[in-house]
Length: 160
Image (cartoon, rainbow, N blue to C red):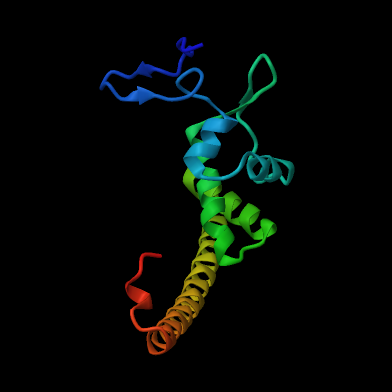
């Protein structure tokens, strides 16, 4: 059972391990491990069109590339900030078009940049809201610690 898996233990010219089934593609399990997303979540993102496997194996397994993993990481970073699936899809489109340089006209490129700025502003505002929430949560935990120490001295010294 401990036999080698073709393509999984290959190395490039620098000695770095090449991941995936052929050095270019990864199966969904490896993508899930690398992105810390569940298989179900990745499949859901596929169903909603946020990510599309770059290929399928002869057996029909989804195959992903580094670009697909990068796309999933963007989605993973947007989710806790409260972005909707439509907003995620739009931002991924904006960044893909800017990165590919497909915005032919200067006004089209500027429109894409303006959309990117809008997302950056929304992300910045949400991060600030989360910082406030975290500060309140930490304050609450400190209040509970003080109450425990008052009512059960030494309680906080016990291993949790």
